[in-house]
Image: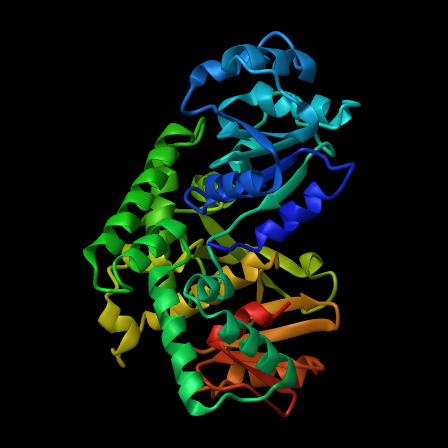
Length: 433
């Protein structure tokens, strides 16, 4: 599958002064696959160490962090002389070996200009709990997320459609009804499946049959892996608290007001009891947070209210599985109330994949704008609607109060621009750069 991170990796390869490349992301987002693919296509040789598959690889880093000493041990293990000028080193599941992470500083400072890529499922958690000296400023850290909708279109063979969506977004020109409906159906397919590569592979391998039991089997496997990680790598945090927060997300988003409520985690739950569990899930990339702001003024962080926030699942496919949602609910059920929370989660997932920090705004209990975007052109309110009914007192109140130059309404409606509101179909969220 073609991924946008490949462009970032290519820029890294073409940089003569590149630092070691660290790829961070949740489990099953495709880190190992994309790095292996990139290395094989762009380097003559690849030396790969997977610290989970072979625990003994950690011994290469025990007595010395000098790159030449480490490489000599690797050469001895593989019984091969390594031409480092044409070789890339890939250290996978590096979170298992803290000294391997520490060694990146010395790889970066070496005169030999080694090419090193590292990846790991829980690197976000590991970085924030690093016991040694983390190589700050000595690594290029990038994040990999589940496939966004544009990447889904590429995988589905719709590259022409993806380009057409970008063009229509720029020009505010609506599609003809047939193509608009086609892309809405593809959006719903992506919404149900999510963006985990393993899930999408099963979908394609089974003739694009959404009813294939194999789809939910893979989703279950991914969630089981998440739960195992929570138990194994929670360290001094009670893993049951992490699991409770994780399992409450679909309940949080099923509410009319999707603001996070501790009582939905546990009857007498509170911030003190669960804040470290929430932080662990955020660092693992499993959940995303959207903080409420008091006023839409730059910098938005200065107006952030840390006590009030929303939590979104990193992948809508997993959220849908967690909530027991069926294909019928997504495509045909007109009375499906949970669709609002799922749609919000989808937009949050797309925006996060574009490295956007998530905020929302409320005015007491009367009005709420789903996302506030901090764009180069200014602060932009973004309202999300699951269907074509776009009546919104909240957005109207925001516009009246703060007079933004432009507002965005994401919905099932076609492209357009009326009265300062840019209409963005749900299938075009990836265009909001």
